[in-house]
Length: 449
Image (cartoon, rainbow, N blue to C red; front, side):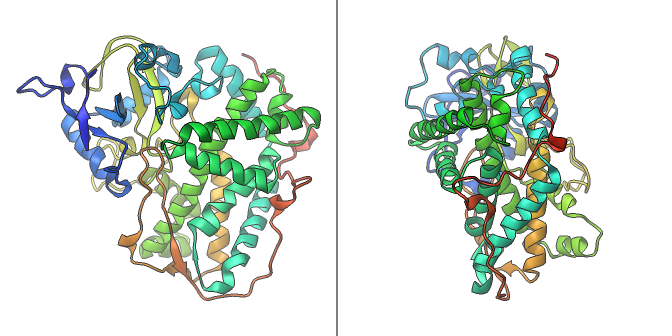
């Protein structure tokens, strides 16, 4: 599916007729999650490391496919701003108020949309809040929650590991980190699903999420807890309630779905690749090596918005205009032939992938996300050691999303086992257990700005 690119420069025009080039539409019924890698390579072959794409009707952007170009995009704030108020289409009134892309890229007072000192101020508060997580307690909480979820389907002999495990585990753990009960956590995840889908209901999903989090902030203002929300509210950086709200939106949207996809995809490659599974069982590879392989080949977020050119420039063989939107093609950059070995396979232990971005805006939560994912994979491997796919591998489908790289389902079978039914920690409504007291009981100190 393709559309003309009305704002593309000369490099995005047909070399014979001079007419606007056809560009890939990353939306609509023609989108196929299983063929996205082939689409990236087609774009790379046609346009080079930066390609014109369409994100919604009338909404055009550049997709950065090259590893080197993506590093420059993420590191050079003087050329590429995070502030969508620089976006030319938005300034010119060409983005409809009900555009499904707007909730994903519209400006918020959050670190994802800030540059320079303002970004450093909010980033410091978020990083300090995350640094307060007690890794040992978090690991214990993840393991306990994972075992309780497994016990819920262990005697069935079959399960969908996306619906019953990967999708449920991060929800409960992140709910505990935020200090919310399980019901509120479910409401948040439903809202995240509507937002990330890019569908017509994205605006309503964004509104719903904001209302839930605002209520949570008001509660934590009244009663301080040992959780991320309280840490942000009381940080020396003195974030406003609005800044706390929108940074929580960013953290929850990115953190939940990324971890869901990372868990499910790691389980998929272990189930589908006997050699990898054998190397893991024999100690030749670690679970972390398998996690890194997923981050290279199937990054949980395949494309990420957005940067905005601060000036006219030549970039990635294209003529970029000031105010153009550029999308981070994380999956495509990881598959750049210029950075992979000759056989195209990532090397075990190599963490130079771009799954978490790069530069000053690299994901601040990748360490707790790795801990959650590693523990989730380890726990189910040991609890259900004879897991196997219940369908042929070619029947597994990636969701049709331009942003997220995740499985729709992961049907498995195994020898049924009677495991003790354990309570799930985050199901306590009145006072959910917070698995992350500050280390040594200390509070975060202000960082230099």
